[in-house]
Length: 342
Ligand SMILES: NC(=O)c1ccc[n+]([C@@H]2O[C@H](COP(=O)([O-])OP(=O)(O)OC[C@H]3O[C@@H](n4cnc5c(N)ncnc54)[C@H](O)[C@@H]3O)[C@@H](O)[C@H]2O)c1
Image (cartoon, rainbow, N blue to C red; front, side, top):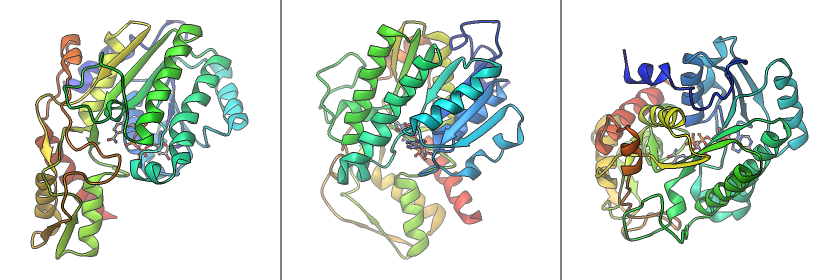
């Protein structure tokens, strides 16, 4: 039995508050990178899933295996179109109420949000505001939320869940922090329980964005040279999507406070940009050379060094299988293989 299967055995204990209805989830951002992997895991665990995505960043083909199941329904809709969303949730609640919402829809392109602050206000914050309105209107008692390590900003210290004040350095981080605040207020007023997952760079198949995908695309265009922002020394913890899904399910099964917030990631394990670039080259274009643009920060809003604590999650009983470098190795192989077939 795989670890994910064994988590599956009691994975819905925490999100499921009543035995009288089948387990049914609303997943926002369902066609995205992480959302589509989550949908597959929830369906594999026997739940009914309704997925929402406006397909701005997500792709329909990410849901190709989910679409084969009768327990899955997909709606292409914008969460900020409240009248449309309200009708979808009302119609879908008629047969059986939703057990919980997994809210993953957001702008995941941090650089786009630095260039135009409306992007994160709309897709990272307003989506949360509207999801909370849906939860209240349709009495959906539980919410799991994909937050981010970007809420911590550029603090030169270990990032534990209880530090503050938090001063994000990107609009994306700011709008995620604002979303956490809105969820906290909702938990006081009408939500029965909420889980907030703060994670750093996640990698793996179906990636819609991120440094590995950028490198693969650049190398496809020019297999002789790879331009890399910064000097290659920036280092971050990377985390594989399979570990992330398992951790989120574990936390929802085990953490039973009204507001549960957890860093998720690898501990004491980081990967340099140089390693990322060299490994991608090895898989995708072995004769390419690297040209670093210089400086220790890739772009405005990028946090150059992250010291991430996952002690709280370890105390709850979960630890990742892969180190940061192993997560990167596996993801690069997956992404290069996918891109060779597309
Ligand atoms: N990938 C990472 O490294 C990472 C790290 C920390 C947090 N997160 C968070 O995890 C979640 C999933 O990220 P991902 O990497 O899968 O990104 P993604 O872009 O692949 O998925 C997000 C999905 O949300 C959809 N979406 C955006 N705005 C929407 C709207 N207004 N209405 C309906 N759908 C909308 C997009 O089309 C996309 O499919 C996001 O909330 C992201 O902020 C991701």
